[in-house]
Image (cartoon, rainbow, N blue to C red; front, side):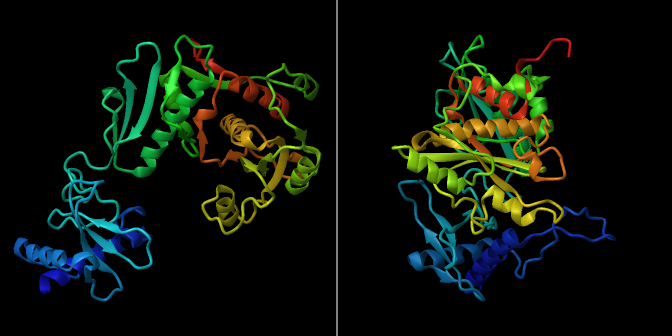
Length: 411
């Protein structure tokens, strides 16, 4: 029985370690502020014989498993199924919808996102190349188009994809990994926008494109690698920016009036149009910019803590003003995500070029360079007209003529 108690207690201890591990703030220790506190287990690691006894008892307990002493959780054995060819131990908490995995390798009992075989995440069994892997693949059989797939190493890619070995990178820090990952995906997205003015068409298999929030240095490095440049070509006056060519504008059914709320705009759209409509809008302050779409006025509710606007609202410095929703216009409801994407790209480019608040500058006394807080965009909405529309809106609303294309050789 000692083996079972040790096994389940050790599992519980390591599960708590994953959730509660913090950073030290000591000013006298040799450890850096990012060094986790040392955690000593209440029980020593099980011997091979003790573990074998514990595993046998847990298997015999069936789906219900055995209780973890001192908690209301249990450890159970989950046999192989149609989704995996191996069995594994699971740590079950009644308050969680999802079970946590315990590796079946001796003393490898980290319980969050552990991969059973052949890549356990515990430091004892990860081997020399520990941490995270970022890869890029292409289609070895497609000689006509440049096929791009950026992946975090997890599942094997389809067999027709060929890894570009020179693009593989290893990371110990997940934040650093995500910076490079988002920079790579965003660079591919910018290349997509240049079609058909490129010699070869790029096909991006990544639909969700993580935006490089806080990773501008990594984005510039990746763009330099591909000989790509994004810069302000010219600043425009309001009179010069008004006239746009056909096809360079979002097809608004109605435009928002000055000071009109999103609710009032939607009501007007529903009354004047016979079809289902949606609003597209910016959330803006001198410090942040966000683009979104809505079918009703109930957007960015305070209970949705994963919402970037709500997250900013809850964590912004006290000196920063509250963000304001600025509706832009009414579009067809079935097209709202497409036109939201184009506004999101405008917000991103304005952020990358450090443009001042051009959405509602008169609402604030302070001026700064708003940062885009949209986290991801959908690359499936890119078509041959996308850059023309984005470029046109940047000229009309942000008063800049932006150049996106090959980098000059003398730079």
